[in-house]
Length: 148
Image (cartoon, rainbow, N blue to C red; front, side, top):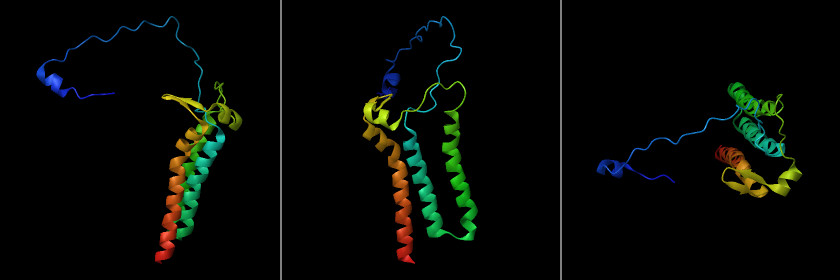
């Protein structure tokens, strides 16, 4: 937790201390283990990409005209690149870790910085925004169809 200390500084009660000494490492790590998969199953990423591309598809069909073809294509390419490049990172040489399978994910959940998450909670956190964006696109398309 953080707290405001302006009043302590203004009263002159703040004190300055030296930074703690850090012991140098005995040997530098030449090749530390790299985990580029975030430990989540690929199905969650696939669902995320499907929701975002679904939003682009819905808006392209609902508001489509020839002037929007290029921007919609560019948006779709950004989404594919935004998830494709990290997918390539997981296959790079030197990445010994593998993402969890769905079975492992359902059995163990995932450990985050703040503690262990149940599989359902982790899936909700990962898919909440993409699903809301998809429903937002559906709602906008329905409203536009009803108004016109």
